[in-house]
Length: 248
Image 1 (cartoon, rainbow, N blue to C red):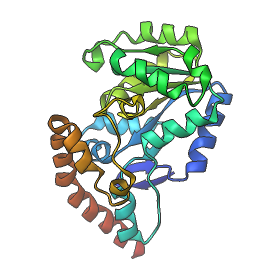
Image 2 (cartoon, helix red, strand yellow; image 1 turned 90 degrees about the horizontal axis):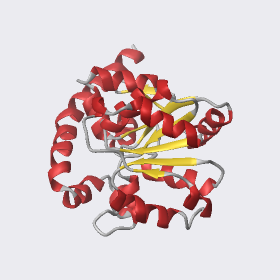
Image 3 (cartoon, rainbow, N blue to C red; image 1 turned 180 degrees about the vertical axis):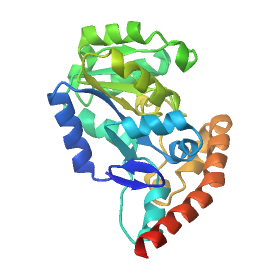
């Protein structure tokens, strides 16, 4: 992995998928974080989130701006790997026993119907919503017991950031095995429900997916986007100073 802006990212998609496969095959228990711009911004002043990212088996980059900044600062090419792409790619492998945790039954039902078209085995895999409560109030031992009975290879978690990251971190000690992967809004995107679609590819390529997200969820996204805009200039300057120091 490569460390930029204080986070150790794995940008190589082949390494990401191979590592997840190795973790599953070895019976490992752990978690994978998908770090977007909000994750990066929040981690600067949230020690627990930084610790969680540091202890993750893999952290992928789900920010379109981080690769752009790295190109400007270091002249290197790095790619974004979003939670949606990670989710879709692993589903299409059709090789893992999975469990789907989080969001609501209103999302989980159409999600199951949609993604079972990719892999029909998914119809027999467990989908479970989680009660709406503060992340510290979950009964992690009880949740882990239900997961251990199912014995999945991969546990998808969709609670939003940073709740899902804290959830995976707290759940890990109680698991027998299984790789948790936090995928944020991917459940909504793959449910096929109107109003829950990802931005068009041209917006993603132009680094303006945030505009689509604001119009889709204005109450939630305006504050998040403001946090990014407020934090990124300082992060850019700090990383540029690090680059200059390395060249001295």
